[in-house]
Length: 396
Image 1 (cartoon, rainbow, N blue to C red):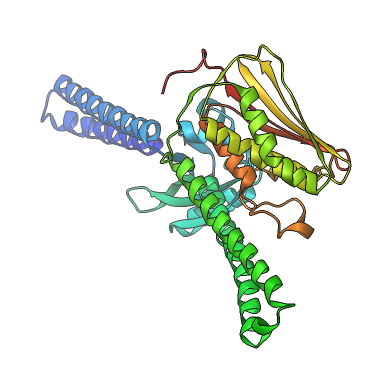
Image 2: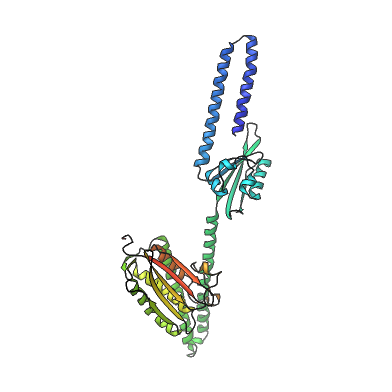
């Protein structure tokens, strides 16, 4: 673009010089006046070139997207700030180098080639291999006054996050469909069996009715947890935070989990220092977090095992941990345990909704704390979360 303007200026000056000779020979105008006129024309063209350059600069720097400009030899001419970030370079370093050496991806190079050769707008979406980002690309031809292709402008939109959200949405629909379909199919099958005569069989009917009740409870819990998770994520479930003693929350949650632990012959214990300061928390929500962690720990700990709930002071926070001596979690599964509907033990997928740990994560994050999980297969797991101290936290 700038090159074209320079060529135009040179051509005008050359044409003016030739005209000078002709006019001088004819004696139509004084030579000095012709020189002054040429100087003024050159100044106006120079200012026009500067104005055009400023427009390009303002566009590339102010546009909310990623852009780059190449000439017909595929050499970089301009690079927007976002393109500098994407390709880990600067415009100064990139200008004059090939698009292949800057973008480091043959797909971008090929797309630019199609535009330069065909003169038509080209579009393509693909993964930029060096950065593993999903890029939506549109390349436009740059034409000179004679409608010849002299370069190309590439517009890039990073759609990685959009693709990830779409994948999350698809997984959510798949998972919720499965979670609803399984108990409903079980209920329907048992209802049909009862309607076909089992209702009159006193040896069979009570067990079927009990199992139907269990499935209905599962669906009710699923809907309740989905609603709560959605409310917390959208900020529609305000926290009722007050200065709260952690010891009382731990003991209350352990008491409520005791019946389940006794049925599975798992021992429960609480360990807290006597001088542990209060935290700024919604007591009912934190007790729910503790119950989810305790229920999971008991569920995956065999007879004779133990679950220990503890709290310690850590860098202006209270850290609470629930440790068990259960089956543990594999290295592949561990990073995903806080995802919605993710169940580590596929063989026991009928237990729980797969939302418990997702709720734990969002409740703690909404308190300004953090969650973590450590585990080793066959040696148990430890789930921890932090809560801000009452004197360190802001009032609601």
